[in-house]
Length: 119
Image (cartoon, rainbow, N blue to C red; front, side, top):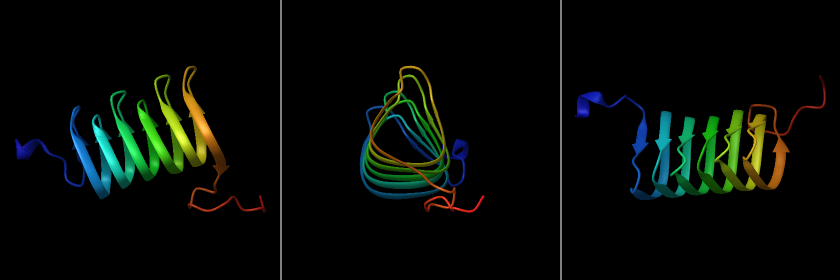
């Protein structure tokens, strides 16, 4: 089964609960629960997935829930079943009808900082 794993990826199955700090070089796919901090290139949170803690990724596809701090350095997609609750920073955002966003919002320049004033 280890041969089917993709290098640099993390998959958390439904019903699995993890606590700690996770650095994922490529894609993190979360169907279970994480309490702590996760950093990834791309984060996919399934409808059954819940993350409580600080989340940072270039691309976040949210179908489940993220509570606390969320930073999407490129794109944030909140799907119809997705819930982002807390402090949200994004470079680009798309929210489907039914998606839930509660908390503070800040647009960033895609490098993790506030937008530059010169365009």
